Length: 436
Ligand code: 5CA
Ligand code: ZN
Figure 1 (cartoon, rainbow, N blue to C red):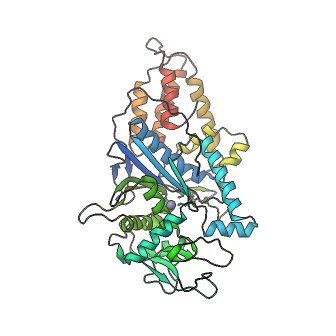
Figure 2: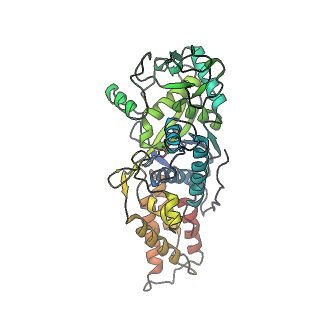
Figure 3: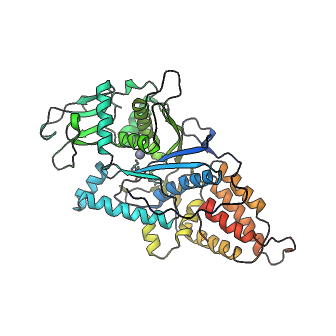
């Protein structure tokens, strides 16, 4: 798919920054260097395009955008890959319920997402792949898993399976991956409950284990289906879709790891647990080596509204496009998101935007003069804040302090530096994605 245009990212004094960028690893709870090598590879799960883009989505993508920007400032070659789940149960259900063709629904919401990301100054993924586009690769991967015994078929109910009803749905056999469970580290009871809550089917008869996830769903009456070769007609399961898109987009060779897999915290289990398991099976490592998949899993806190998680199913959505239509500056929307640490669970409320709008106005004011207090300390503080688990609130506080000093009429201006406001404006843009 065509991603949105890449915003200009100015280079800052002291490039490349020497501070290693560290993030919270959801598996261990520890702060780890996000990308130890010269290349930084990120897979952040993309949207399911049926009610895009709410403030929760935007918050998650802005969080990973901070990581990308910190890596760029550190001189890394950033390879960011993402997907669009443009065929899946919830999308088909919404299309059915509203009488819209599922392709039109996906296309319109994907277009809106693109516009929202552009407005919010999010750097696009280098590779952005739709589930529909990836069907041949997914089918091939699933067929290979069946062949190697890492997947099995489960018989269909009467009426399913089109011309080849004898070929069942395909499920992963999790016993093929001894490391299953190491991403989220849930006990069996928690895993089963979360699996059932988040789209899994623990009670499906014929499965070897209740947690085994769907890899290939055979054709059903009224549902879209593609040629799956030896699998029979059908469509990809969700987790394997992301495993294959990550593998191909990041160019992972057998056993190769990448740096960060990310998303909102609702994706930790089962989605990232399962997709990492599939990657280990699809890209096996020589014995004794570190297994394939992401070195670090990073998750953003869920944003709520009126006391509940903002979600399409609850219908309590604040859409970025509605805020934009109402005339709000997208940079203020971005600042409202940055005012919260990305791992915080918080509620959007009516005070979020006015506070951000006031801050944006103050920053614009502060960088509009000729000369100002030195930018060095602020730049170092913002870099240090972002390197410390993307601490945007601390970064904003550092910029606020500079702005306050710069706007203080009683201050001593004898040590002012002519280029300081320009450096601050470039810093806001390059590191925080806030265009002034
Ligand atoms: N297509 C899948 C991922 S492969 C999906 O989860 N799509 S989504 O549209 O439901 O969500 C897109 C991203 O936004 C995911 O990372 C998800 O975790 C995140 N997200 C969804 N709701 C919220 C929320 N309320 N707050 C923060 N992030 C959210
Ligand atoms: Zn995903």
